[in-house]
Image 1: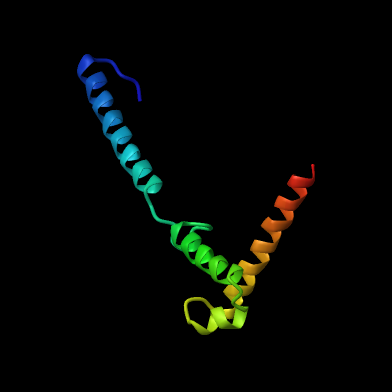
Image 2 (image 1 turned 90 degrees about the vertical axis):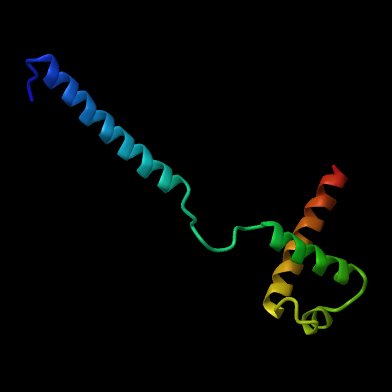
Length: 96
C-alpha cells in the first residue's frame, strides 16, 4: 500500500499500533499459561520426600512407610533410589 497523504500515514500508524497491541496481548497470554502437571521437585514433592527420608533414616522399612498411606509403594521406591543416588554423589565428593 502506498501512502500519499498525512491522513493515510496516520491511519496506517493507528492500524499498526492496534496490531502490535493485539500481538502483545496474545504474547502475554501465552507467557502466563499453565502447562499443568506437577513440576519436578516442587514444594509439595520436597515436603513428601523429606518426610519419607526422615522416616527411612529413623529405621522404618519401606512397607511401614507405605502402609501409613501418605505415598504409594512406587513413589517410595523412587524416593529411595533418589536418596541413594544423592548419598553416592555426596560420598564421591567427600573422597575427593
